[in-house]
Length: 279
Image 1 (cartoon, rainbow, N blue to C red):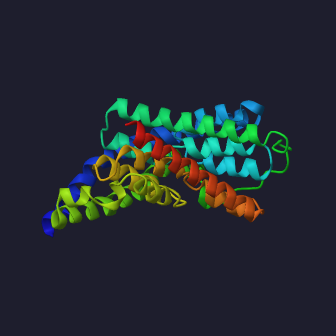
Image 2: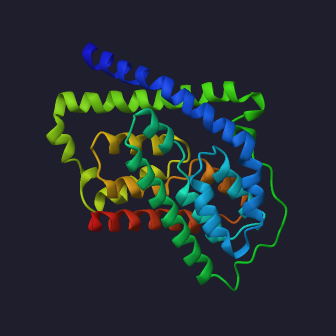
């Protein structure tokens, strides 16, 4: 047990410098470009899903939350909202960078998420073209706890993010190391999460966790080889960070919110299953 704890701590400590530098860069980007991205998505019109799919990939901690706010005020369409939700990388990108994943792999995952977001969003807007018109209504305020508190300075915010994600990685790595020690890699590889279709269905549910935990767990499991690319795509596509949490707070049509949740899950799982069939 002590060996497992020591290995886990060593693995996480090695990641801390990379995590911190990544979050520092992300906070700088959010501080400098966050407002411009939001203004651009407001003016996107029918090209909203395309622009939303591209902007969602950028590592901006509050973009999915801002999109929920804009949709609640009917400033953007449902397709644009879904494009942003599906493409947002949440904590996937920092974890991949800190784990020194190949740049080719990172690029493929980001491009795949953006492509699915744009296509799905455009399809939804096309189907709802007669009643899916932004009204330019009032935009509600997002609670401060849903933001990254950039007003306290990017350095403090980067430290806060690093500590939170390091804790998630610590817990995930410990459980994985524990499972590998007692069950062995072969048994772990045969888990239900790594089975076709069912793996995507379960990973999609994990992705719906409305905070950073879902994307951290999915990314870690993928990098450890516990789940395949299809299941990873399902979980990462359905994960929108705190976007869904904010949507349920500011959009008072609960039936509509549940429909959006179902669409997000269904599209993510479908894309994961298609990925399994292709690869």
